[in-house]
Image (cartoon, rainbow, N blue to C red; front, side, top):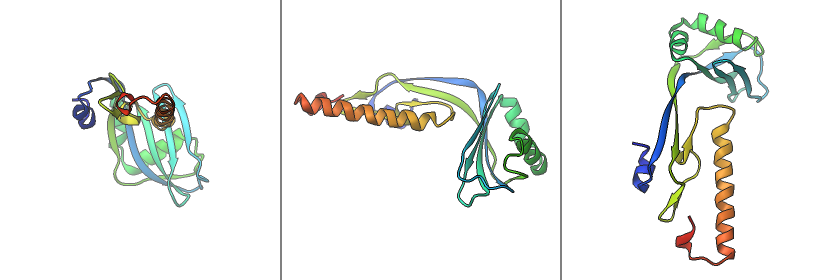
Length: 165
């Protein structure tokens, strides 16, 4: 199964797994983030600190080998807090993990076509990738812009709307 949306549209997809998992959690920190997202690039994948409201809390996405992500998830709060602070080079000061950490295996999906029967796929209904550098958001915005260009072109040539996609 690709997704309920793709299945309903009778559009097939290709999926594949990555040899990585994402450790995700929220944490508090002593220094303000000033609404700036920070991304460290490592040999196993990015480590991203995404600012949350209030200035001294962030969401974490840490991409690692699956066994390392599970090891980190199992650490005591104080140990994981110190490890995340070390990996962030203390740019936000002391860190304190909050309850609710999770590990997600990473996979990708791409639809075999982006439209059928007056249905147009955009964003993560068309393609999903691991969360790296807002790639999903940027691709979604590109998809929407492309669909707008196609619609404007079709309107200017006065084609029947059933030929839109």
